[in-house]
Length: 174
DNA sequence: AGCAAGATCGGT
DNA sequence: CCGATCTTGCTG
Image (tube, rainbow, N blue to C red; front, side, top):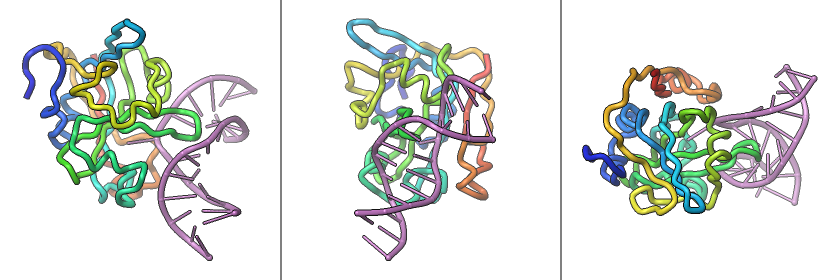
């Protein structure tokens, strides 16, 4: 586990997605773009966990789109929703255990579609390695203030019971 | 080849 | 509440 201040290493993202979801809010998403480095505190994430999770894109098994979720943690999974918005996800867990965290909210940039637009993130980031990338990574700046609350995930009623009610949305309240 | 649905957002 | 906009994955 990376306890020193600085970039979170791959081992952090090899944990189970629910563990990463508890630990990620309060950490910083860092984007380097045209020589500028911008840091945004992560405030809200949502966990998608395994083929059995009927809300997870991996519920139908590996496909061209979801194959990155089957790789080991620390890579980005990017997809387009409604033909309009890019969604930013971080793959977690061990290889062959498809999991990902949707980044739903940053400090000053709420909403998963808005934040990718604000940070200039598109499908060219699919498969990007957070441990090695020169343009996007996550930093630990020490303990966050505030508490983390959980809520059901948004927009996944189609998943049915029990998946639609799992409290797998994690929000940092400050 | 055709089609229905979607981890959203902004405007009425 | 509705439309935008287009990829994905299922069906045949």
